[in-house]
Length: 111
Length: 117
Image (cartoon, rainbow over all chains, first blue to last red; front, top):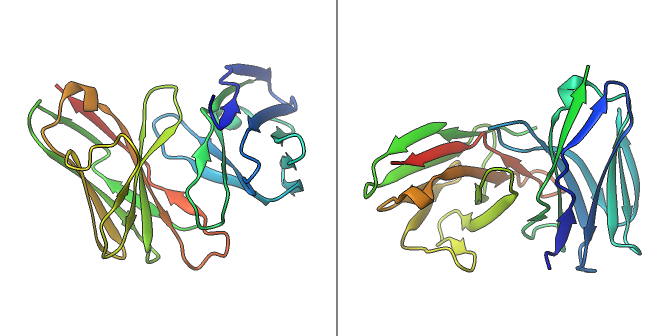
């Protein structure tokens, strides 16, 4: 079993929809949680960084962490075609440690 | 955010030859760099962690004699794929930690597409 599970999708939504992306994990020692966006044939870029449980909002993006359920989510409001990409969750046990990545969810937002 | 570059972006080489990929942090000094490999529609697989001035730490199952990593300066790390074979064809991505940031976040390069014929 993988330490981090992520539904690969693909997920297709109409423009303006609210998108929910999720990851589950098995290692209770994970404390730092990240979401990355990766466009085709490009390197990932950091979208959200969260420490421990709780919510964090940045513009149209909201990250949620529920450590009791070992479940993290990324919500995208008012989705745009430019949001079409692969979204990777990542997490680590210590701030300076190495990250463990999910397999990524491919999202397409149709105009 | 910090900028990381990779060169080349795409390389085609013949089986048995070696190819070098460069990773540079452009506007910060990176004491730690990471090398990843990514197969189509799959996640990032960490190959090794590279610390400036010391030997790289390889992940289990990664051949250190085949994937040579050198972190000679605070802004440059190189990955050399030696005696490349078609199964080495992949997307290689580096990342670098910006020590100025308390989050220890890593910034990724744009990746290098290696094709071995």
